[in-house]
Image (cartoon, rainbow, N blue to C red):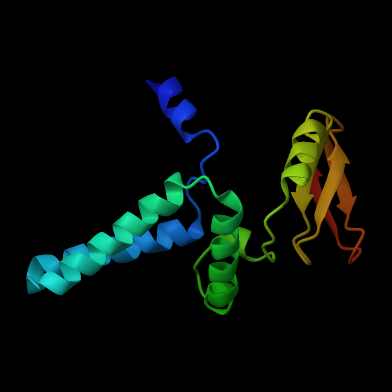
Amino acid sequence: MRNRLQDFMYGRYGNDQLNQFLSLVALVLIIINLFVKNQILWIVALIFLVLTYFRMLSRNTGKRSAENDRFLDITSRFRRGGGYGGRSQQRSYRRPTAEERRREREQRKYYRFFYCPHCSQKVRVPKGKGRIEITCPKCRTTFVKKS
């Protein structure tokens, strides 16, 4: 069963931050509709759910990625502040290209990747060196990690 699902999803866009937001909005509208009993809220929630599944099952990954990037740009000022997003939202988000992802996957055999706690620069260090002190090449901040 799992292989069939993987085969079906191969080449499709999948889930991203915009889909998670649309699903959350649909869920909130459905919960509100339980108390208010408004037909329009139900239709709007259904539209959000259909849009979420359309984006998730789409094969036009470039367009879906551009939509997600626009969403992240629009919501960036809200995500920077308070507790939303945590550590991963501290660094500026740029979706890596397919070539960059492939290259990093190949390098993971020999290297570990860390993010500088000060400037969020990605730093590559060799694996198997134990506990090492890493100096960020961008801001010269040092931090200790286990490779």
